Length: 523
Image 1 (cartoon, rainbow, N blue to C red):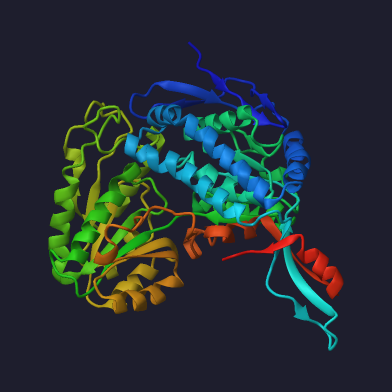
Image 2 (image 1 turned 90 degrees about the vertical axis):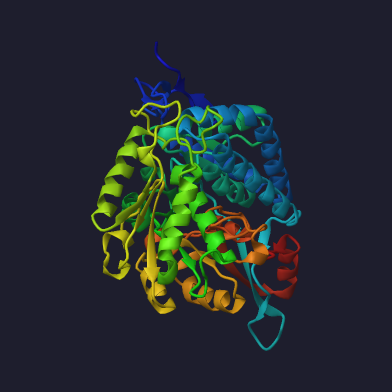
C-alpha cells in the first residue's frame, strides 16, 4: 500500500510533486508514514508569487495588523494541538513532554511576537535612533529608518524542531512584512507541512505570505534575488555551502546561519559536593542530555567542574541518568524516546566512537533494555563520558555528537576552564552554576564574546530559570564562530534581519511627516 504524498503549498496553491517521493518513517516502529516530493514544482513561479503577491499584501498592513495576524495563527495552531502531538510522536519519536518543547514552544513564540508587535501600532516603518542635525541651521537633518525588505525569506530548517524551528523564524519575518518560504528537513517535514496547511486553510494569512515545500533542497538557493534573505539551521558543512553560493557571494543575499555548537556548563570553583550550585548543575546536565534525546543545538556537550568534585559529579549524574527509561514514547513509563531516524542513530554512534578514542565511559544507559522498542529502532540511551586531563584532549573539544552524549571534564583554575571552553571556537550557550553573584558577573563577561547566550543559574533563580537549552524569544539565539555567526530572536531585535536601513536627509518638515508613519523600536 502506497503512503500519502504530502502536497506542497507553493505559488498560492497546493501542488503534489511527481514521482515516488521520499519516505518518512516512524523512528521507533520503522513503519513508513508519508512521502514528500518537490519534483515537477516550478520553483521560479513560487518564489515570484511570494515575492510579489505575498510581499505586497504584507507590506500594505501595519505592524499592529500583522501582529493581529500572528495572534490568529496562534488560535489556529492551538485548535489542532492534539493532532500535532500525534504527528510528533509518530514522526520524531518524542515523548509527550518533549513534543511540547517543540509544539508549544513554537506557539508561545508566535504569541510573544504578536504581543510585542501590537505595541508598534499603526506604523509602516521603524525609526532608527534620533534625528541628527547636518548643518548649522536645524532645518536640515538626517533620520535613519528601517523598512521591510522587498523580497522573500527562505528558511532551510533542521530536523529536530519542525514546529519551533518554523515559527521562531516566521513570527518576526511575518511581523516585519516579509513573506516566508519554509523548506523543513525531510526526516520530520510532516509536522511543519501540517501546521502550514492548517494556517493556510484557515485563511488567516494573505496569499503568498506563507509557503511550504518538502523534499529536496536542490535549486532553492538559485531562486534567491538580492533583496531576499535566507536563514539556515543545520550542519556547519551545509552552512559553508550556503555562504559560498552565488546568491550570497555575488547577489549579496542576506544570510543567517546557525550551525554546530559544542556548548558548555561551568560549575563555579567554590562549589562543593552536595551544594546548591552542584545539585543545580547535575539536574540541568541530566535534563539537557535526555530532553529530545539530546537532539538540541543548545544541549550541553561539555561539563566543566572543579577537580575536587569530578568523581562526585560523575556519580551524581549517573545516578539520575540510570532512572531514565528509553524506548517507545507511546508507553507512559518511557522518559526518553528515539532519535529522529536510523541515519541519525548511525551518526550518533559513529560520533560516540570518536569521542571514546579519548574519553572514558562513566555511564552507559545502552546496557539496559529498551521499553517496547526493538534494538533496530532509532533509540540510543544516554552516555556520560569523562576525561581527567581534558587539556590534552582534541576530539572532545571539536566533535559534536548530536544526541544524548556529554563529557565531564575537571579543571584546576577558572582561567584553565575558560581556555578549554573557548576551544569550542564559539557556541550558542554556556551555563554557569554558582552561589556567588560576583563570580557569575565576572565570568559572564569573560564568556560573552564566545557565546550568543550565557545562562547563569544560582539558588535564587532555581525555580524561575528557563533552562540551559530552552531558547526564549526575548533572548538572543545564535552564536559566534563555529556556531555560525548568526542572530535570531532577542525580542524585537529579530526584526532587524528582515528590514533594510536607510538614512533620509531632508527638511524638518519632511522628516516630521515621515516620523508620523513610523515608530521607534523599543529594545
